Length: 85
Image (cartoon, rainbow, N blue to C red; front, side, top):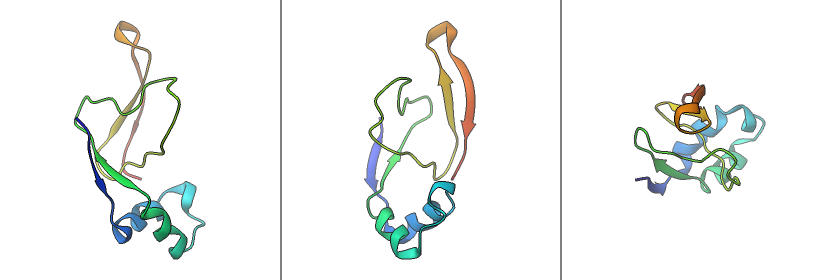
């Protein structure tokens, strides 16, 4: 089960500034963006988003690792492992 809570602005700015997509933002822009983020604690083995699902969010990994898989069941194939940032 995913747990969702807020990501404090100052805590979020560090993670956002380390992310390539947002590196050109100044501090005020980064802080404004951080205040829009929500933290999701995901348990091992839990699906965050399924292949071909319509995207509704952008996910940044703050800690731990996330596996990226293609296919289902016996044809499921690991294609990447993502870490923080």
